[in-house]
Image (cartoon, rainbow, N blue to C red; front, side, top):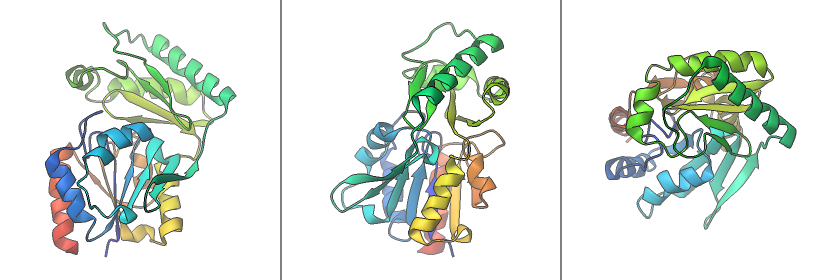
Length: 248
């Protein structure tokens, strides 16, 4: 029997950089009554607060909820009154400089020049550097049309794997590339969940939209967790309903 259900956030529980909707929030509330739940996403903690926590109904079992921002390089748990960090694997200043330089060089070498950029393109998330090709504030329509088949980011990842081979490079969201220390990814976060919660890998299930080689959800599959690839939040809702029916 599955005891822990793990989700990606962007593209899985919610549209890119958008809040979970009321139906999703209600389903997650129901799921927390029958299983423990974790969310591992490339987004940073403020994104979790805005997209996820602010929209969950009052009275949810936060003691059964585990949040891992920036692809599992951070881990937060609820201590009864506040969300507090269990750990955070921050990059050094030197590492950050190398990663930013490599991202900028890869974008230039690939010849990708969007007609418009909305906000900052490269964001320092402490334990992760994230490049959003069209900028952090790009509208959903522009994001979804820029790289729907991941081909552009596959090219960028190829450059990055050669220029910074000692780091982990993953594709996530609609336009983003996430870079962390090698070995610090969603598989690392899942191992932390296993050790902290005492739940075996076989007792976990993962749902995400980027469960393909190079995708930032793929590490969960590589960790041996039974995984379900979803197309969008609507399909995730149906998966949650099925899990609730099986475990309830």
